[in-house]
Amino acid sequence: MYLELPPKVSRILTVLQSHGYEAFAVGGCVRDAVLGREPDDWDITTSARPQEVKALFLHTVDTGLAHGTVTVLLGRDGYEVTTYRIDGEYEDCRHPSGVVFSSNLEEDLRRRDFTINAMAYNREQGLVDIFGGMEDLQRKQIRCVGEARERFLEDALRILRAVRFSAQLGFSVETATKEALRELAGNLKFVSAERIQTELVKLLLSPHPDFIMMLFELNIDRVILPEIREQEEARECLEEIAHSLCLVPADRFLRLALFLRPLGERQAYQVLRRLKFDNHTTGIVRRLIRWYGCELKAEPAAVRRAAAKIGSGLFPMVLKLQDTYRDVSKVQEIWNEIVREQHCISLKTLQISGNDLIGLGMKPGQAVGDMLDALFQDVLENPEHNTKEYLMKCADEMLRKPMQ
Ligand code: ATP
Ligand code: MG
Image (tube, rainbow, N blue to C red; front, side, top):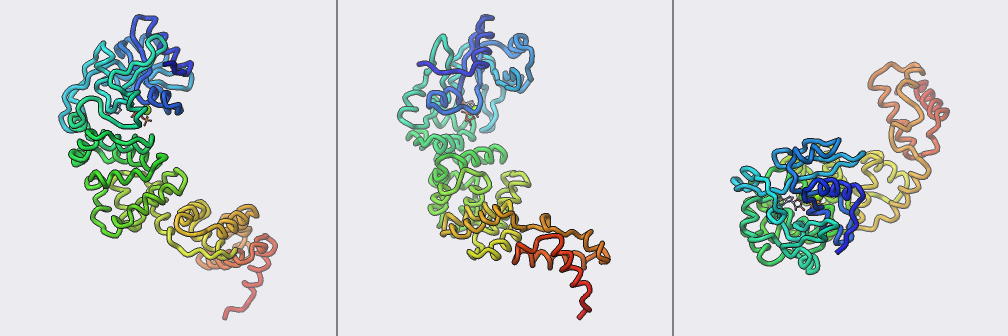
């Protein structure tokens, strides 16, 4: 089998080989190249020890020397070059107690999680596929390298990776692998929130986000999403949620919001915190859940008012969410027009500022804010009023009016 390697990957392989070492592209990049998908990154495995790799390339970074990984920098691109290794005993379902370098490719492939991730390739030897990865790619199935139970016992994250790859590729999980998944799902409690978060997001952003149902079928939710399991209402609408996930673009905010919405804003927030999501993501998802069900009248002033309240960044996302359960085409059209016409829907683009009002003689303070807000409300109703001239005149008149 011939696979096209990026020129820089070929260069690294050639340099290593011409110094007497073995070197292959390995893992996810080989899988993706065989499938005709663009690999995210190209990893290289070699018989050379980290210090030997470092000696051969001008620019390297010690990414994980203890695990045998050196990043080789060529121009702006970095490639992880890892020495063949055997992982030591796994003590706590997550980390090998140590790694031993090896000079045998087969041993390196054997430590990898799934057969489709355990293939290596270089031009000279072609595809090295010892565990039947090609066959599983053709059968469209995820299968562990070796004994599934053992592999999940070594590293419980693989449980979640199996579901994630299945969703990314649209593959099924082979029977023995699935049985082991179900049996050992509880061990995910040993895995850090950050690693769970990464896999969950990849699953949600995959072409088959509805495969999220597997988490519930295999009892994985009990450990990573107990909040959903405990809330009957949320459990009841899972199928509907899974379906709706397929109706929105692969955007982390939209898909997280749809997925966690049945929990309600507060509990969704707690889940996001527990899974160590960053503040930005947490804030946006929380607000999306808040506005998911809000009423939106298909009428220009009402749409401007809603967009002003929700925020112009979030508003189109709320439309995409509502599009999963009702017809929002009219509101969408109105919104497009508002954007096209650049109607003012935020104080930031109001053509009058607090300083202008102070220039008219107002004292800094609450009254300035109230006046700005009154003018803004008027502009939301009548976008054509958003000119400095009009608003100054209007403010001036209001200031002259005797207090009632
Ligand atoms: P992605 O498209 O997400 O990058 P990938 O297959 O490249 O998918 P990585 O996490 O980048 O996944 O890992 C690269 C390779 O390292 C995998 O293909 C697999 O061979 C191996 N690997 C990664 N994580 C594990 C693990 N937890 N257990 C065993 N092997 C693993
Ligand atoms: Mg990768």
